[in-house]
Length: 117
Image 1 (tube, helix red, strand yellow):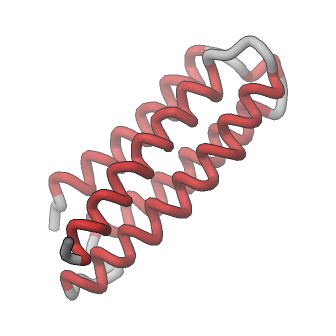
Image 2: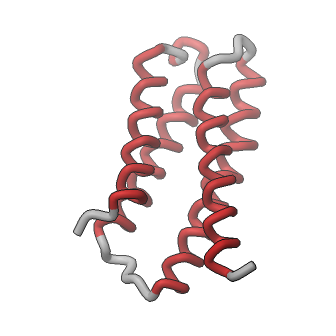
């Protein structure tokens, strides 16, 4: 298996973890379960996404300044902040925050796929 295929596999796996963390932040009733999803799956998934993305970046010879690279990095920080903020208080478990978190994750994914600029 070539290194680029390994990086892609790791990134796809990590993106699934991010999606599961997003669902886990809002669907379970228990606050402890929601926090475990965000801090367990979300943190590991985010770190793995960034590491695999950096591996793809180095392998492909791309610049960190490209909009399709910096955009998802910034969007993923906003996504993680939204999840952490929402699981720290039961009153913040609202559909609007689930939509914001999902939108941020989908926007980051779209930039990774389309690669504008």
